[in-house]
Length: 143
Image 1 (cartoon, one colour):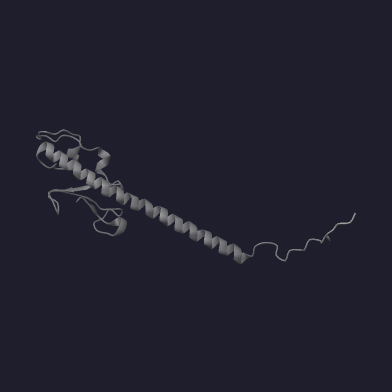
Image 2: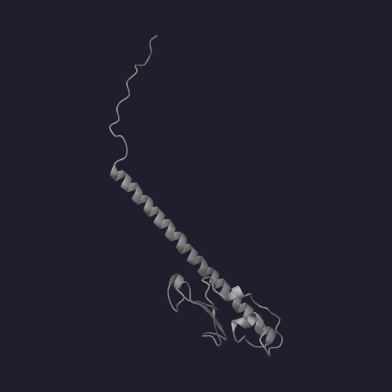
């Protein structure tokens, strides 16, 4: 029996595996990808909290307006939205739940009467919980 193609013996490999440089390059690239993905995920979480705080501040302002329409006066404190204060007529609450009085960073909203630009103001100091700041650390105020 004769085979139509000659059979060659297998060639010995000139390289038996990956070099140290190739392994280092792969590890560095994987580390960079993981670091980039982690920063995007963590940064995205704070940006989502900022958007949530903006929505919560406006919703809380609407609840304060409803309180004022029912009672004829602004609440003295945000806690007045939870339980009827003494001597206030027309209270039809509760207007809010206790958890709604904290921002997404679990810090109580600051309530000011009068506000800088209106009869009242609600403020969250952002991720850093301090006045001022930029980006996710910026103050969030009712409009």
